[in-house]
Every structure is written in structure tokens, then in C-alpha cells.
Image 1: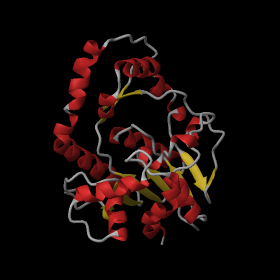
Image 2: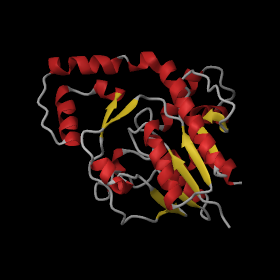
Image 3: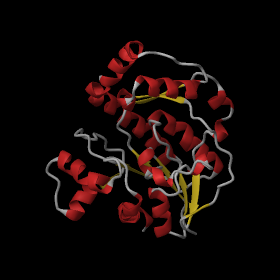
Length: 271
């Protein structure tokens, strides 16, 4: 019997360029993504893509527990997130109706299997360091939409918030230490359930993953893997990050036409 696989990650596994945005079905917000390409390569396996843009590792726990309760997958593959994302709940809708917030996509042979499953229209609000790039009117629109409360703040009123966000990268090493600790807790729990568990990152952040518990892809960064395929051994993580940009539609997220090639990164766990 073929194994079932689950992927838990961020927008790197969830999205593609805006021209494929699907506003009619927000569970499948984009018409394709990297995990669909993985599913097409491995048509005999059921794959649960439980990835979501902008949500950090604190949301991984509830996602994996729900995956276990609903589907009990054999294999778990996790993206190790880098950025600072904090879920900022301003009501109890997420807690009372989690099923419509659970971001699972079920794939078989590259075809979606749960297109009719209900999904929320607006996510819980997130404190995200990428918001430092937003204009005051964009911040007002975001927080109004995600909290259902009117925001009409000017640039000076947003100044303190943006200042705090701009310092998040200064604490990257501290944050990453906590992230790896949470990864290890997740890993130990799933291994105790008899599951196969694998970990990878999208881009190297220059920090060593100091863990003898996690089974990491080799190389553990998908950008380093692509660099090694195309050029050779990575001697500088920044060079690998720059190399990845040519395959992305926004310097960070993979363009759909390259997804079948990048799906090869995961082939080893299907053997």
C-alpha cells in the first residue's frame, strides 16, 4: 500500500504568481503550487499540503494534530520557517470554527480532492515583519479587514509599530533558537507515533541548525540544492540565495514553470 504524505510549510509551498490566483476558492487560492508538482511526480501517493502564507511555526502544532486526527499520514515533511510571524487573535472565530481555518489541500496524481471543502474568507490577523514595507493606507486596510474594526491611522501613528517590525531581523539568532526547539518537540512527538519526519528550509539564513534530532534533507536548503545542481558546492549562502531569484516571480517565491524541476528535491523520500 502506498504511503500518504503531508507537507507543512509557508507560502513557498502554497503559492505561485498572481495570474494564477483563484479568488473563487480560497482553500486552493492559487491554481498550482510546488506540492501539486510533487503530486504529479508521485501519482500513487495521497499528499496533504497543509501550508499557508504568513503563518509561522506556532501554527504548525494545531495543523499536525488535525492532520493526525483526520488522515493519520505516514510521512511528515516540514519547512523550517525563518521569518517572525505572530498570530494576533482579536476574536474567537479561529478557536470556535477551526475546521474552516485548517488549510489542508488534498492532492492525488496532481488533482485536487477537496475542492468543495469550506474555507474561511479572512484569516486571523498576523504581525509580520514584511508589514514594514506597507504604506499607512495598506496597514489600515489590512488591520480593518482582518480584525473587523475600523483603522484610520496616519503615518505618524503607525511609526512606532513599523519601528518595532524593522528591528525583528536583529533578533534572528534568538528567534531561530526557539524555532529549532519547537521543531524538535514536533519531531519527537511524531517519531513517538511511528511517523517518518523530514525537515528542510527554503533559503539559508547563515545560522547553523544545531540539532541531532531532526532528519534534514541534504542539503537542507532548497536554494543550496538548486545551486549545487546548476553550479557546484555552495561556499557562500548568499550566492545560493541570489541564484534562486532567477527562478522566482518576486525574488522569493517560485515561478510555476520551474515547479516540476524543484519538485525533484523531494524525490528521495518517495523511494
